[in-house]
Image (tube, rainbow, N blue to C red; front, side, top):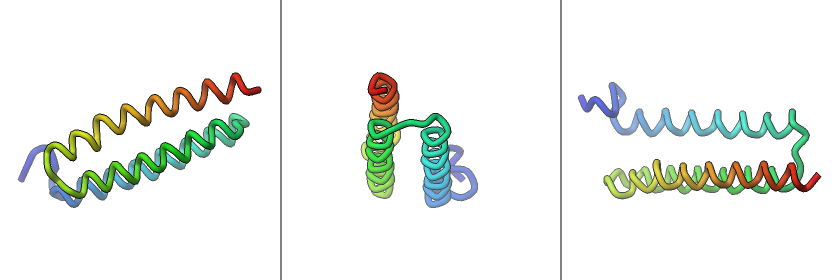
Amino acid sequence: MNSLTGRGGIAGSLRFATAANAIMAAVLLGFGLISGMSLPYYAGLALICVCLVVQHFLARKQDPVSLNVAFFRINAVISVVFLVSVVVDVAWR
């Protein structure tokens, strides 16, 4: 058993990551609705969802380089997209 992947192995880890990302997308959608966000926020949310799909596509390859890109670089992009979309939305008002 690999200590990084736990009991479920790589497949279980990928399923857990998929579930966690789905929950994150739902929470971000709820945040936007509760906060009264508008078009810039939802455009950023759509881009974040595309990034999540790309992330899981890269992670399916299961090689170290693809996993590094998938979970570190794409999460950095998602963070910047979220920040920019919130700032633009607030400035848009």
